[in-house]
Image (tube, rainbow, N blue to C red):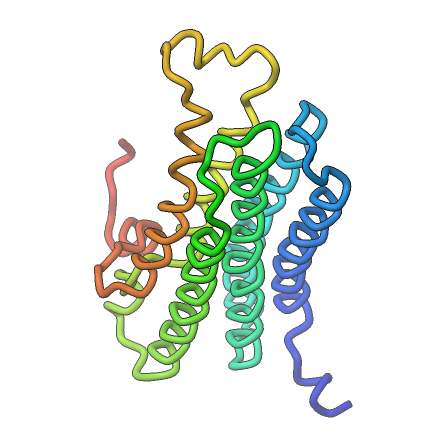
Length: 232
């Protein structure tokens, strides 16, 4: 009970909402895969995929909010930081990989097949992304627990896991706009939805590599807040 009484309640609840969104995405993907089997993706299935993608975007909102609330209420703690990383590993690591792997599998076999059936390759791409996300979060926690320098809050070392998840989720959400008319494909005379599916394994592996890379990415919000800015 003494441990529980020291837990920052409000920031932790917001962080757990982030984790809940990730778990819900994973469960719904499993349910949809069981329902479909080898059947084609219909419009109602695309709506479910869209909802899963929006859940990950909602989790990003919670992820941005929990730290702000913790600082405003003076409830920052090591517990909150660890909980945040564990939640991010689920929501921005496992959930996007499972969502993309499902979409890839639906186009590697069955009536919608447009990808070569190499399941081990697709498993490897998903695994690279998840493992890289876990390593990225572990590295971030290691840096955060060290000396708290100002430049650590202005630049990220390696692509942040929410940004990597946003890339994959955006591809899924774009794909769910396929619908029945495929107006964009007709307008561009290119099957953009086919290109998205073909690019998805590369996006998984590429985002994973960028997360564990040493490339620096600016923290735009903190950079803007650091100095006075004109209205424009």
